[in-house]
Image 1 (cartoon, rainbow, N blue to C red):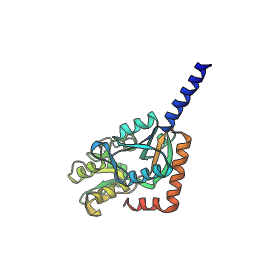
Image 2: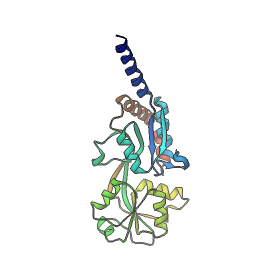
Image 3: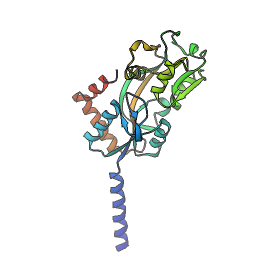
Image 4: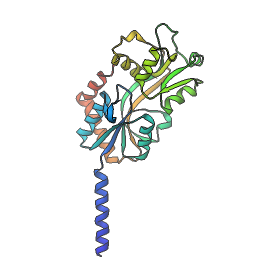
Length: 240
């Protein structure tokens, strides 16, 4: 009997410890949603918004900046929420989608004002090189449309610098990211030309598939409250 009681107590302790384990809140270098600073700390409008949701929901968390490939691996391992990830059909069943940060975004080709505007993939296929963030989803968008000359970079800020330096002919990213990176660099909006939106994009806060239902419900309730009291509107106003 004593051994049975000890076993039950042990199981209860293990369960309690697991329930109290902080959620890992991760982000990659993609302003305005998140920026990875020295020591892997995070900043940015998206990080501030996500951290506020966790605090208002009473959910303990630890934050960490990661390259996007590691971020995807963290989501697969469990107990993780990513501040921002593009929602695609291939990812739909892999993760738990908590709330839409930017559901009206889209991918396009960014070029310099003195270069021909790129409004379709047919034109992009004729370019010597296209810049893009390191991301399986973004690379698939390009490759599936016949664009294979791709210069992948870990940070969108670097892609803007490469475009301005003439390192590639066009930069493939979302309208929101492009506009914000230009603004963050202190440049006028006319520094780049934003082509026609070619692929609609929806950026979401996303969790591991195994994230406890109670945690998801609390975060979704906090997200709804932020929309109701104006905090979400204030966050969106910071993006452009």
